[in-house]
Image (cartoon, rainbow, N blue to C red):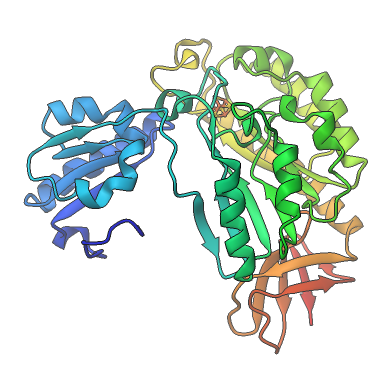
Length: 394
Ligand code: SF4
């Protein structure tokens, strides 16, 4: 939005002259909501120019443009030029390329204290169910100096926590002959940097150099490591690069260093029969997991998984999703009960004396206080552990 210099943002798309649809294409469902939204805008505001942007422009842009459903199509690499593109008066199809790397790396700020820094884009993996590499291109890293310069500026302005993000964050550095561990060390030397979180890592990206950093005080004591499944047959069908035995070994090693551990997990992918699921869930019980992002598999056209059989019924996937999230919720509760002291929490802006923030283990904490604690770091001992989260009073 910072690039939109000569346009005014409107809250009401029915009164707008231009509607930019920043679309997602991860699932078929996302694709059809974009199509429905575009047709409804054509009906409700026929004079507006509808422009398709985001991942959907790479998967559905051509067809929607040919069918004259949209006025223009703008690919990822073109986002930075949005101010110029919106001035184009003739229908346009500007898809750009998938090798481009955006120069804007600060993705978003939370209050005045946490910043999300995009360190890379794209992905070299080819998981069977995923369309992302096709619409985001192969992995490419941002220049180290750009990242460090940005963090230096933000740290000088009071930001203390940095969250490193990207499409496949852990692949950072492979194209620049450096590594995630090298980058982390350099960020930690910047004055004012107090805590660094990594959005997500793949098990095979965790090497000895990275493991050596686990005891550094600036590392958030929570890692999100994407496993996606715990059955080896499913991992193979999903064309993943991890396997359960090595995942288990890795998780135990990291948990032994006092870390909380989260993961992404897909339930209901084709082939996940009763036997596989029974084994998978038993294995989840053994894993030292504290957080989970569980997804019910959703078919995506033009992926390998879309042709796989047997498919799993929606209600079964839903039950498995529930079983998994409840299990990890209980594990998280047990972890929090054992970690009630020495919690370092960065609070966000508060309301009516109630503040929220996350501790080093990525658990949410609610703090009650008469003082203004917005954007403050607080050290909490003896927090109250409840089903919904941790609570404290200061
Ligand atoms: S690693 Fe992630 S982004 Fe890359 S293909 Fe697999 S699921 Fe998609």
